[in-house]
Length: 266
Image (cartoon, rainbow, N blue to C red; front, side):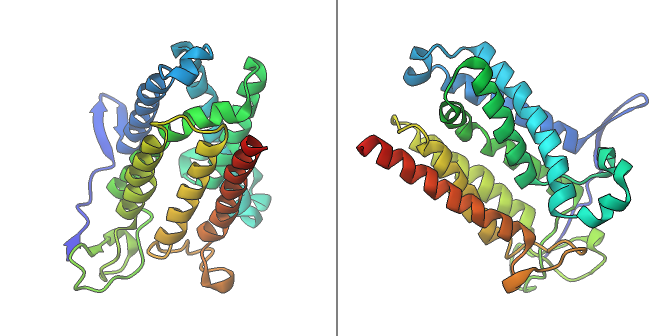
């Protein structure tokens, strides 16, 4: 059994400026996106369609806006709508924390739709390009969660070799390090799956569909090991809010993948 190392959330101080680990994780996520998307636009289908490195830079700009705005609004609407109705000004208090992946995903979808419209591109051409470049950023975010000792897991059997005590939880009982489970699932595994899948040309929409299926499925599974939010607990059928939000993702991914396949066959 392990005890969380209790890392200092501040990675570096430069005079009065404090640089947090979580901020560095965001920078790492953006850097990896630029590198991987830069590789993607050099591949035959995208290079032949006129994609350039400047497009990658613009995609990152649109994506960051979608993540921040969508992630915050998603947290407000999906997790604490009653609270924020009574505290409207705190909707903008992002420094107090509170971001939701599913909201961020919706924000990115809107941002990519806008990008596609402005550039005269197909929506799924855009999302197929970026989908394999997203999981490494998700992995960086989960590493940030682990360093901060937040979003810990449910109670674990003490005999589990990697069970860990999180002092921030207020309990001395060992828990699952669910942040690391999600790092491996939505980060390493999903990246490997999508990057391998895109080694061969795929039908427009299939890569996007596989991303939704892959993320939704792994998130549904890892949520069984993650401690539900105290203010929500478990919902219907003893599933967490994250699991209920992941089910539509899986359904949408299957629908998109099948649509792409049938469209090609027709």
